[in-house]
Length: 535
Image (cartoon, rainbow, N blue to C red; front, side, top):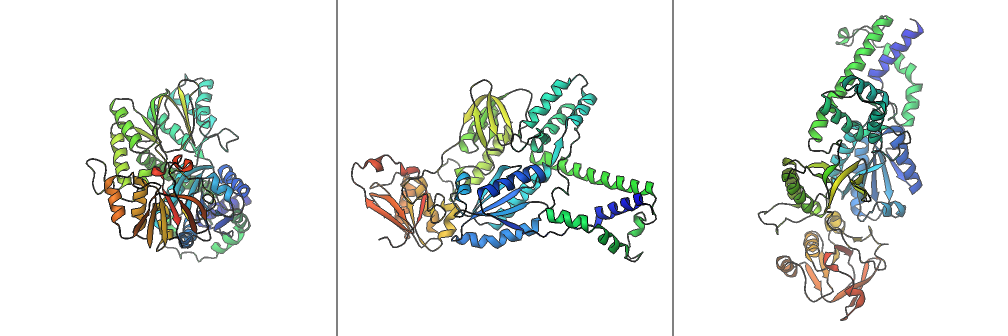
């Protein structure tokens, strides 16, 4: 057998039977912000793999519970599909501050160097679902659209397009990936959206190529083993007795094949693999992106920032008016998405949770023509018209912007509060309630949010004490009565929290006309503190 035939034969064997051995740790421990930044940049530029980060603390009970699950999911997912890392919030506080970690465990999912999604809490099923989503997105977005391919496409469907116009189309695509894109390439979701838009316009899909090969996505150790183990693997397989495989007659005899037969077999297998990949992309594209935003040739009429009830209401009205609004909001949603009690104060709704309400609103808005960009807004350029809304992966030009971003928890900015975040101080009972199981906890505030948090914590905590700076609650009467009548909830009136020390809360009686207290509105506060030894 000639050297050329031996090479072709080895390639065929490797393409079907080689399984790399991975030696590096499944989960990497991050020790500095610089190390994490280099990791994110490396996989954004060289592999395209998603990075899944677990923000934890050694003193966190739920963190210890989810740790073996995280390790197991890392093994099941495989290092050729994702990179798993753990970040100690106390050991690397810079990263915790950068990504706004206010409760632990928190899982952040990165794709192409950008934050794709976030999950709070120790839910194995939820974590598995999020990992599956980001891995599928990584595979789907592993496409590259080159200038040569785009020029050939336009020469076929629209020869009147000049090279300058084609350059402009490609530049618009590459501008949607400003980060970690030194070569100004058109890739990922931007390339897929452009491909879909061109197919919708010209009834023909522009050809894309893989941005990263399977070898690129393998760990470095696996690549070394693959290059060093070819001859051993090939020789091991050649020792198998002929005829032992019942399906061997259905495939060509590679030992006796000619050069032309080997080339033909390789071509068949590559074509079959490409067809399967295109079919998979086609199914995923139109199932998942049925109501997704696709950039057009003209600015949008209305862009709505926010995906809560206010944003969905604006989307419904704008869509019914024929404005085809674009709703820009991250998939994890806002406060209503994390509501742990039923929505009771909205007309016509009973026994439904916050996520159910948001999902129904989104479906209704989509039915009238609203489209959605599931990204986080980075900035808005209102210095010129049309306005520009920048997200992690796109730039939306629009004539009008509706801001419906809702509210977020207010921090008191008292001594010890920042230092104890994630170590006993939290802003979300739904996220961190499990960490205070059968413990004494404190909720600070007197509005509806504080009442709801107290009722949620009362289900699992040993006792709940509500601290309020006035002598009566501002919350709705129904919620206030539930809190005051609950057997596991105590109330301290006319009290202001001044300092948090370790596991204790130091409070003082509020004096009439207290300037510090008067300047702080606790009605929107959602505070949970570890409570021990306070009478």
